[in-house]
Image 1 (tube, rainbow, N blue to C red):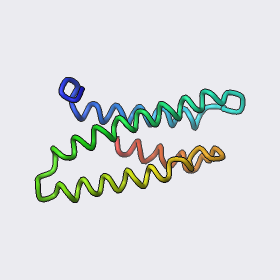
Image 2: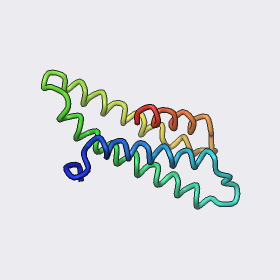
Image 3: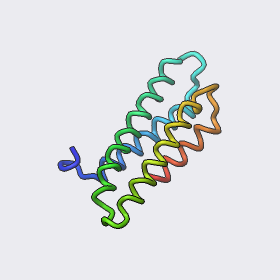
Length: 109
């Protein structure tokens, strides 16, 4: 898929799709429709996971050998921190955490 569509396109599509899903979670009135909230969370996670996989491959090709270990380590560290914090976003529908994750995703894209 990377060779046909291009690495940058796949990364940007994943980040923008994740941000759109998160905006849907913020703007929606989810009091009666819990399934749509879960669907937005599922698609948001799927899109961001797509971009993570693409960035992991793209980063190893982008950096020169001397900086590759630092770049891959920094990317892995950021992904692990985000993975730790992600479950707390939906807990209690805290909009502050959702706004923060949406802002970071939009800025990364």
